[in-house]
Image (cartoon, rainbow, N blue to C red; front, side):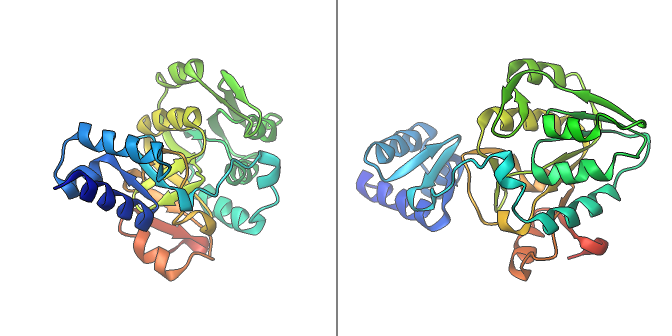
Length: 256
């Protein structure tokens, strides 16, 4: 295949799908890893796409910026409460669980203030919600503080969490596109990847607006999660698509 044709095929694929991985291109075009990476670098240099970790993203889809925790507090409030109420029913007293950053997870934390649990978190807002609980054994990870999300990240947090094990972890995300779960910050994504790999059960909490979207750092695969909990506004089309990857739970414990 000529280079010009190869570049055109890659560009068509990224514009059609929004986000593609190096491995997908290798499989489709039957070329080497090095060739794909050179092609992606050239296309980015020419302003045709955006390189992201492990692949590339369409410029036309790159309309996202990182919203602050304060901004997110006013978005999809009822949906987040629905998700949190369902997630709380999956937790048994006495468990050791991890709660990640994000306003959906903060709603879950409010549901757990009277529960007998050990909770580890890297989220300062989650910690503040639970710190006065008389029944929760609470641990806040230290590290580099990201004020925009209220999360502690970096090598200190990563090294500490590597030695921990969790019965369940509850994680949110900015975007899900097919089998990819993404967030804006690479440092937050790296920590969440370690947490999920050290968890017996992995549970993703996202509202209906996160499906079919893209963000900078893909930190996990959708099919690696045991459950995906979302709200009742999820479309039937997205239920059908994402049921191929994991088990979806929506309010009233209705499986779709």
